[in-house]
Length: 263
Image 1 (tube, one colour):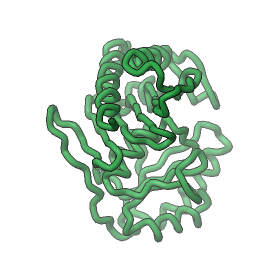
Image 2 (cartoon, helix red, strand yellow):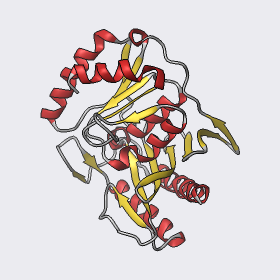
Image 3 (cartoon, rainbow, N blue to C red):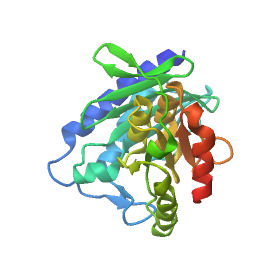
Image 4 (tube, helix red, strand yellow):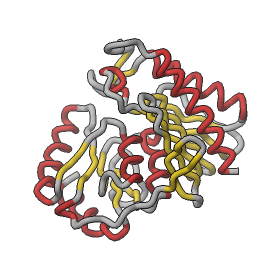
């Protein structure tokens, strides 16, 4: 059944991605509203994309639940709910930076069992099914993802991101400043979904971010986990307080460093 949920997520994700790509105007995109701060933006295409995803999922599975970034949650009766970010990386989308994604995950009884992420601007897509691995799609082929052996922490490239609330961002930047002397460097794409998929590809060695909502991380978190990374929170499951990830052989040293830096 999880594979069927994945196929639906992929079908809808690709349609939603094509919808956004086709309807995005040239240049910068107008902002429709803001959320947590003046820089935490929403566009009309965010809202239209989420409506499309919701309609397609409920057409196929009308009794499921739905959790989306831009709309009200819907409680289902099947034990399956869908966790959706219609455009993860909206600031990139607004500015025309080609790193923004549709992210769709299916949860069964609260556990993510299938996830699909597609970079709207490039068409690159990733998927995962719980217990069945994760992959990058190349046409009809699935290229399996596997966490590479990590380098020493001093040579590691760490992916991260920052909150939109200035006071929180100030604390996060101070923590990153403490982290930098212990690693090779940091990188930031501006889309948690794409960062976690890049981690699963082996482009980064580890990841840390605060302030992520479930729709930011549900699908891509499964992609990274099924590739062999440990994705966790500060003291348990990943949550809004903390999401950090690393290869199992690096978790003890890296997670201790994250805590010591004050994230």
